[in-house]
Image (tube, rainbow, N blue to C red; front, side, top):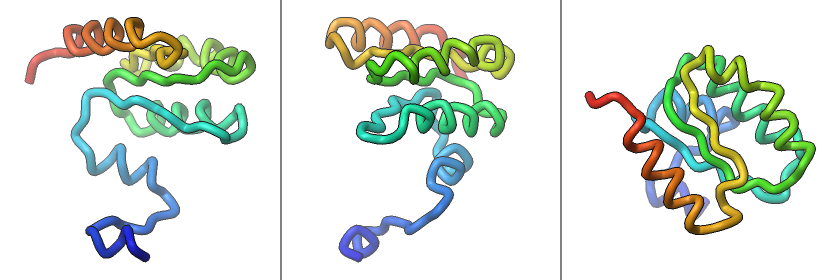
Length: 107
């Protein structure tokens, strides 16, 4: 329980909680060593929540990326810009972050 002592919250719906509680325009999904279907299931939660913004990941697994490519129209309809494989090169990640920050509407 060490992390709870620092103000954390134990949750079985952590992705849903994050989407509802955090007011972020973008998220970097770094979810290593999980099944290839996990990233797609997380992205589906973002789509289903009505959240709009930028999602970036660092995955390199072909089947996981193929799942995301199949979701292109759903992502576009939801107003989500998705950048995959951005952890492969630091320069690409920096460029993606700059582009994402500039493409969001100002509050």
